[in-house]
Amino acid sequence: MITYEDRRLRALAEDGRWHELLAAYRQGRAAAVVEAGEETAAALTAPLGHLIAYAAPPELAVRLFDRDGGEGTVAGVADHDAGPLWEVLATRHSWLRLAPLLGPAPVRRLVAHTRVLLGEDLSCGAEPDPEGVPLRLEPWEAAGWEESARVREYLPGGGARSALLTLPPSREGLGAVELPAAVTRTGGRPPGQRVTRALAELGALAPWAEVVCVRGQAPLAAAQLARGRRVVGGYLPFALVYPALVRAAAVGRTQGCAHGRLGLWRALAAMAGTDGPEPGEVNALVARMRCFTWQEPTAGLHHLHVALEDPASGVAWGVSGSQEL
Image (cartoon, rainbow, N blue to C red):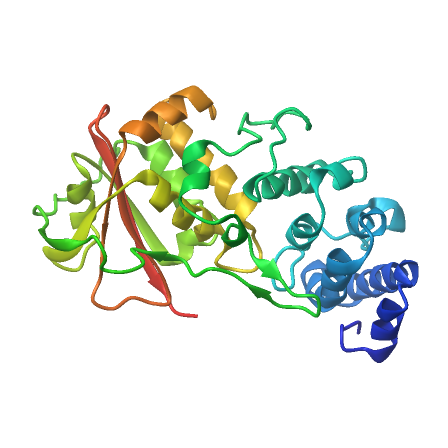
């Protein structure tokens, strides 16, 4: 079994013998696939994969995702240690360094959007996104958080530091609010079903958060989810809500913040009524959107309570949940 704690492997890393480490990773992964299956193999070899993705020269690190090693040797988009191996790689090198080297399209796309989140403008330096998601941050995407907080900070020996998912983060700017009476839910086709599904699919959000949709304003959507009529709440600009929605995809280790950005653009496109992420329509939606957030009496370390209202359509969506680590 290959682990980062193996002294021989650590010695190879200290000596910069990355080709031998890559060979050890591939051999161990392929053997584990035969013995225990793909999922177990990915978990067993992930610590060594993290080391290579973090510290190896990019020319070698990208080969974690190349199929030239044979069956069972390649890391996929789901291979993760403290986070996805492709996200570790993306935090270590610019797109200029990685673009000529990366092959597999799924990994290439996620790395590109990670670099975008980290502040790179790839709108003129990369192939267009297949869904049309912009390859540079819109102003409202960049405004609500510091560049250093947009993606996990990975550590060389394994592990990572990341900002907590908290919305609202505090009572500041909030006040006592009386929510309207919750509407009776029916079995008919709800409005905004495409958006509701897109919000629920924001990575790790779905297992612990509930998503609802109503015809009406944001407080009415909040009323479907809040534990009481009287809450501490208030309105925030979407730029301050955006980071929490992106982070929702990266609460677990299997997905990265690029998943959150891509998923949220899909949801915003659906809210705007477009077939795909058209920046002009999405920007107009963000400019008019009203976002209501509220506190719950008991909140887990990760918590998200927000209602998104599009005044132009008269529809609002609520997302609420809490998770302990």
